[in-house]
Image: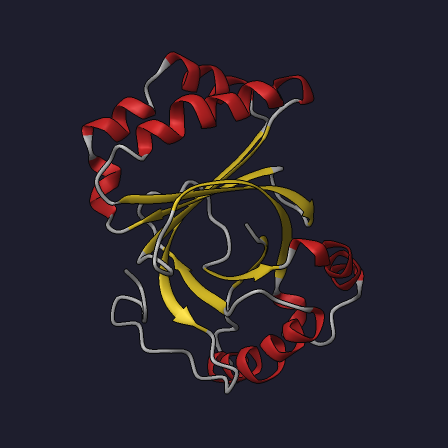
Length: 220
């Protein structure tokens, strides 16, 4: 399982085309110089199933876990320009993964939380023993990847939920998963929380041209 670089941003309203060109022709090649394990994938946040008002767009790039130190050094450097300064970067090391996909799914929910140190073991046990098994019994709930924050301003533990369809969110089993006593205990002790539903827009081309959406190029 790879580490993860997440970059959250809003596109500058009057310079969208220029920013998009920079993203593909300058920024993504700069990521390659540090070392990546896959393409940079572009996501757009949706209003549905989102719990906070954050940046609208997010780029996700898989990173070799052996390069965590190099990436920490890169993220500690000052922004290289005005567009670079727009990116809110978060670096994560992998925890575990359940399920698999053939590639990016059409929808991905990012859920992150910080819990007190004495509750971390209980939080992980809830995910692995109850929450993830319940979610993966839902048709269309394909993969859960979990990470721990290494660098950046964000809650400490991240889960990425890959979904084939938003219909999975409205199922009776999903409502049951949110209504257990263990989940209520977890919700009571967490001290920070974010939840964003993203739609896959496609990989960022190094020429600066994003792929057509059409449900997300390559999205399942």
